[in-house]
Image 1 (cartoon, rainbow, N blue to C red):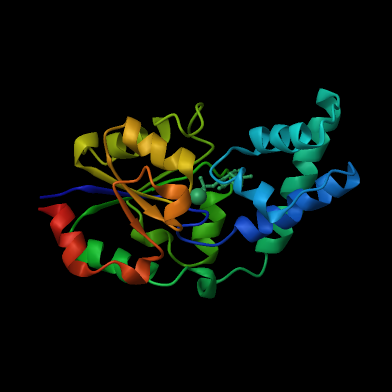
Image 2: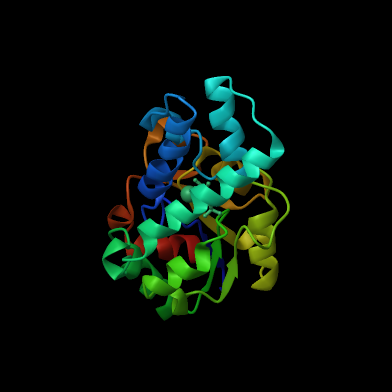
Length: 216
Ligand code: B16
Ligand code: MG
């Protein structure tokens, strides 16, 4: 049977959270807001605009819309500067193997990411050709936990959402998959991702037999 396997990007395929953190930290520092790694967890899977609002809320700081717009541009320019040297080595362990298993089994493969920078990241890391469908932050109006991004991916693959499987590292993304009635697979820590149907610390722990079980 052909199923839809939908991958989140940041935290699932590549660890770009560290670059988002560095770029947001510069913005926070300029505003004298203390922004820690724990705070960064709140931004995973969250859109750029909402991320800035969360940081401003953390610092109890208010700024004009014009200043917010400038900060969003500055943050993204800084973030992109970290991606310049990105290559295949940044693909997280086990990801290539799972994608190849899915390709060999003729399954539908999609990206479902909140990021507006998804395509250049997939190109730079040499992984883009694995994806039949790419849905990213440029294609949706509602952010996770709204299931729009995953429903759109399944729709473009012509596969019923009930036959879709989502790999996600964020709580909002797991909730989105659950709302869409898709199988949710958390990649990361059980403490955060307990709402997922299955949880793996990383892709190296996912056996081919598990993938086959999902397909059957
Ligand atoms: P950008 P994902 C999300 O990607 C990130 O987890 C989140 O931290 C980021 O703010 C968001 O993309 C927007 O990214 O600024 O590149 O448009 O995890 O949904 O792949
Ligand atoms: Mg993510």
